[in-house]
Length: 342
Image: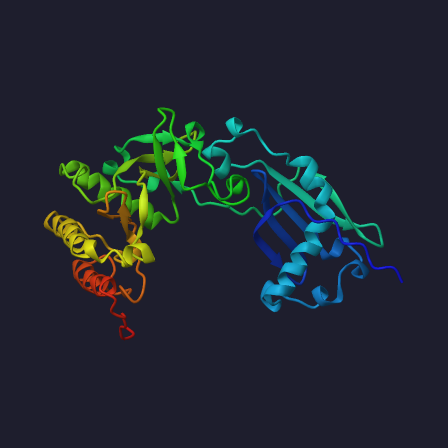
């Protein structure tokens, strides 16, 4: 018997969500900046075209990781031609940050002709589930002080491709680096929750109000990113830092000649924050970056905690900042950090 010919590979895509249940299956994926919803309703097809394993599941939790990947491919493979034809690669100048948040949506409904799955492109249908690939926060969450921060429209912000994956933003989320119309480079920090988008811009706004926006060794907010209609806030533009690394990286941990300076710089920033009624809130090594001058820069005021440097009870408190810095400095000195459950 002749060996089976290898299967034609699927065009590049990235699955962002999937649902496999008793009555229907769906996969949400992104290709070349467009969002696809591929869905199959069990009532629309004969059981003979559904592998026996998938007929018996009640949710995706019934599948292990390998089975889940196989199920995704089974559902996506019939859509191969639509992925190629409906999502050619866009020109770089035509794809801005706004398009990451509001991609064109393409709905594909799977059926069967009795022996195999078929695909229909639904151009007038909006009944399939929609998934936000990135979160945009309503601007109404922002307080008056935060609303006075500079604003940039996402449609005017150019994406700077990641050198390691130049097309990655067409399949996943936005790249870390973006460029505004004035040619300035920024770090783009996406909105992840209303809590983050209230807390972090408010702290930057307070620093501006108190004349501390340009204090050394702290990240600087250049502005908020809003949707074209101003209704959504997609994230923040932070001053771009050419980094050596952060305090998790070996190159920084081994630069012991700088450690005392970094500890002093971090402590000075946190002391200034506390003296002005502000809290860092999320102390851990990844939130201290080292710039090309080998100086420490404190970043990330969105709240949260990372064990073993903070507990849930300690985060966003002055006491937590102090305890977190103690553990951070022990980490820098090479001491293993452990803490009791709280």
